[in-house]
Image (cartoon, rainbow, N blue to C red; front, side, top):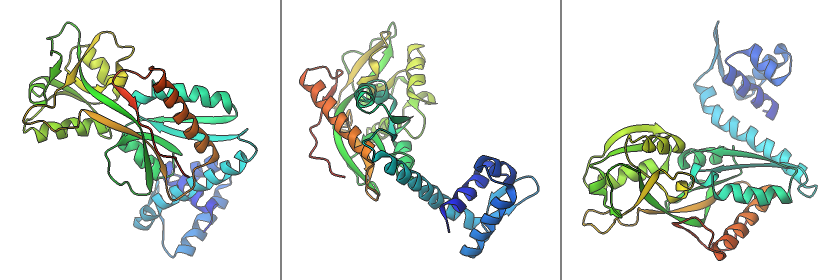
Length: 320
């Protein structure tokens, strides 16, 4: 089994055609077909069902697929790591972060990082925390800023860096929710919730369940920007991180009240952690970004310039 064979296998699965896969890999189709047959002979199983119109993986192929993706991703990381040995003048950093962080903290840190290492290519993945964790485990990211629920996550190390407050947002001009609102009262209002894959969605629904109430969901399935826009249009209210309020003057924020007898205490604040895989050493670029992240957050905290509702968590010394 070789990396090249696995790459060819992935290309066929992703395109559904040997011809298109060969073009994608920039090899002749007979060469690609021969390498995949050799792989099947080596494993002793047929990996692909060769139909007239398309090619699909067999049960054995499905079993190999996630492993192949991870092996190929790790091989690419290894090549990038060798390139980085020249003093970080070349290389790549693949960073994942939630939307609220991408428009605030991440942009500030990347400005510093890019100034120090302009030759490092930056690839940013924006999405829900659950999606980012899965991408990190598959080897598709080097680092990710994710929501930390205090649980052990397979093959990942999480280091807390920020603590942020969740608030309820409503459009200005709509009924005033007051300075505080409990989850029972909130459930009486139409809610706008994110799509699956967002930790925020799970937290909101879990808080309602813990309080014994059924939320009135008006709209569901959007990314963070879409949720905010729908709230601005008056379609409902939403629970969001206080970080996202900057740049949205038409939204009014109400703090969550956890003092009621049905409150799920502690859920109105959440911890943001920097995550990396434990089964492979962080790349030099990832280590450098980690240093810049902590430096920028510490400095911003000292000068009082962190966004409202956000505080810096002083982490222990990070190790590879």
